Every structure is written in structure tokens, then in C-alpha cells.
Image (cartoon, rainbow, N blue to C red):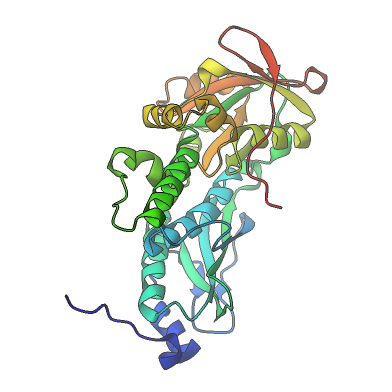
Length: 343
């Protein structure tokens, strides 16, 4: 078996690594006047307002390289930032990518990360315009900053929800959380017996949701086509309940959502059952689905009523009515936010 090629980063140096990265990057926006290769990127003027967001992914905190392919990780690092741009109802245009690398990583490993980054850049039509590279004495760190733009009247904040607005969510929820449970279980099996091969074939959907999430820019474009501007919006990164709490706090409102309206994929449901977990708990508190949670004025309901991937899960209430989950038995119970805690 041919030995895998490994080129030490030290053999080409930081500038050689930057040159290697620059050669893989494609630019899509005429507004990007200068990308990688100078002290700073240069972006052209625009009449639109711009949004800027940054997310940092740390090895051992946000990902585990024992089961996370580097190409998937590169894609995810861009996708989670694009998701924040989407949550503002804006269109992503540029990203910067910064890497902190320990001596475990070779030039080929960086190329694998950038293969995923460039796949995401092509998928979302964003320009990779710069960043930084440095040494790390611990694990891998990836920090991405994304820039987007929109008309001022199209920007959505968390603070715009109004009483009687309809609460909507895209796709399905809980899959990424259940995928993480599967990956962690198979890791422990492998550590106990390295001869055992991971059993992942039956869990392709949920593990894919964890390893390679997709920001819902398709929904943002469709909302534009339908001339629907949500009254508030956020992406589901820390869990549905936590995101609803953010909207309630910012908008000074309450919410009522219905258990039988919450979207869950069959594989997510079956996997939760296998792990002796309540599927609704994974929907409410599982993070990293990167779906869009938003509210709309009732007048916009007919425009979205037949959309196959937008689900109407409840309505906005007065703040003093609290945050409630209406169960299948029509019992109102207080929502609890038990999603991802950053500290």
C-alpha cells in the first residue's frame, strides 16, 4: 500500500501555505476587488447594508477529529457562518478564514480543509477573501468571518416578533443531535476494540446532519421571490427552545408552540427511541441543525401555506402568557431551554 504523502507546513512556511491556499480559491462577486494576497481584502462600495458575523470552531469543543473528516469540517465552518447571515435575511458575499494548526497537520491536511471550504464557497457563492494562519500548541482552531448584504428594509432582527405572528421553522429538527450521539457511541466502541468497524450505514441522515450541515440560503431566496419579509428570524444552532427564548427576550413577547406540529425526520425519531430518549427533547434542545426559525405576519401565511419545507409550529403571544409547549393531549407546559451552553 502506497504511503500517504505528507508535506510538513514548516517546509513551505506561512507564505508558501498562503500561496497554496490562494491557488485553490475562486471569486464570484465583482464587488470583491482584492482577495487573498495583500495586507487586507478590498471590497467595492454598495448601496446595500452589510451584516458581519464570526464563528470559531475549536477541536475538542465543537468537533472531534476522530470521526470528523477534514473536508466536512471545512464545509461546516463556512456553513455555520452563512447560516447566521441567512438568519438576518441577507445574502452572503465574502468570508475570511483563519486557521490555528498544531504540528499534527500537514500541507495535505490543510488542503483537505480548504477543499471543504471551497466547496461551501461555490455552494453559497461567496468569495474567500483572506484570513490568517498561525501555530497552535493544542488542537485545530478554525475561525470564519462572513459578510453579507441586503436592502435595509429586508434585514430581519430577533426583536421584530409581534403578538399573533405565526411561528415558522424550516426542515426538520433534532437530527444533528442524534447524529452526534451515534458518532460518540461508535467512537467508544472503536476505542474499546479497534478491530470493530463503526456501524454508520443505518444512520446516514442524522450523521450527515451533524458532520455537514447546510445553511438554508434556499429559503432566504424563496422568501425574496415571494416578497415575504419575516418579522423576526434566528437560526437553530443551540436548540429550538433556546432560539425561541432569544426571540421572546428581544421582542418582549411570549410563544405557544404545538408538539404535534414540530418537524422530525423518521431516522431522528427512530434513533432517539433506540437511545431511550424522548424524540421531542431532541427537537427542542438538540443543536446544530442550522434551520431557520422565524415569525411572519398573518397576512403572509397564504404565500407560504403550501411550501413543502416550512412548518407552522405555533404563534406569538403576550409576554405575560409565558413560553408554552402545547402537548398532544392539549396540556400547556412551560418550555425549558436546555440546549448548547457555550460556557
